[in-house]
Length: 371
Image (cartoon, rainbow, N blue to C red; front, side):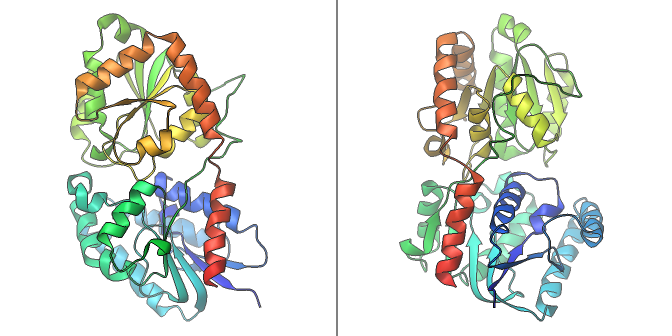
């Protein structure tokens, strides 16, 4: 009889940001192993990873819930109750989004803990999310038989904050990218117009990504550089973004907000960008850096958290707390074509180290060892 593994897929019900992308890509690769029966939990159990009518209904409800704090709490309660009503017992349950659902019945539990921003940087998150993590994270995650995380930086934090886990229980598995999408393109067609030269930043419009710092740094650039290089922002409208949106609207001549775009479009936008700037305060991995590498785009990145581990020597690093330093590093890169080409070549080589196939095989090894 095939072992039965349940993958929590709640993160797939909203536009795919970091955790949703990670969940989808790993689950898609894992499903290729036909010796294991995979099921997916969306608030109900599904046999397939793709779209279903029932899943579409849940997505519509979740979209409504996201606008109202009380409804969010109700939605989470419904999901938890629904899980406890499921009769099926699984050999293994994988929670790719921090908190395993205590209602799922499984012999073994594996949880992915991406970072500790909900403790270290509470101001990066909505209040109700912090309340949810404070109530459920520590009580539920300790039930895991193994923890997966995306960097050695995050593993160190996990071992410090979850002392019940031994070093052998926490596994570092780097994320990947789809190299068929994120690559250098010879011909590019897009359904929207872009400036001839521009800086690019990718990420949800929220405090963690330090977009305010980036906007202020961009303003510090010399006028000739701002006239030559526009700033293009891509990302899902997160939260606490009023000031960011106001600055973008006031400077719409130089700052372009594309919003959430498809992966195919994103890969081509990376290709067209002169440089990618990622001054994030805190990341458990930092996937956009690898995407930029694979598209041949030079990168300026924050020197904090996991980012130096992920970027290696293929990045020009900046201090995210110092807008003058961010501006200086951007200016240095824009004015030095030799540096641009060097970082481009190093980035293309480093991108080869990361793939979803490689990442999924490492996940599967852990699952099989527990089974």
